[in-house]
Image (cartoon, rainbow, N blue to C red):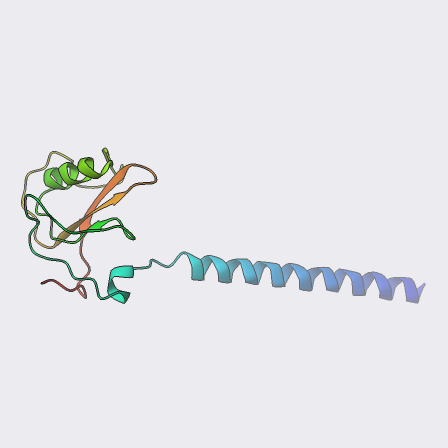
Length: 127
């Protein structure tokens, strides 16, 4: 009887150890793989100020227009030229807002045809 109880206890402990390892790995992967990646800082990509009417620079890998976009309306216009027709639904700035914003960037996420308009982080490079 003691032998059977010992084996059951060992199996239960093994199960708990496996569950703990699984939970730890899931939490680690979630924390590591959901951190935002700003590729333009690693590639030494620089934003220019402000976007010209034509011949603006576009970074294909990130989807960023490599210039400061002063209004949400201009951001939508730039995105529509690339194929992004909608402003991201969580955006706090309406798409027809013509108020000038300093140091805002525009991004076209082509997989979903969505446009993002948000401020640049403080550590960015502007030419």
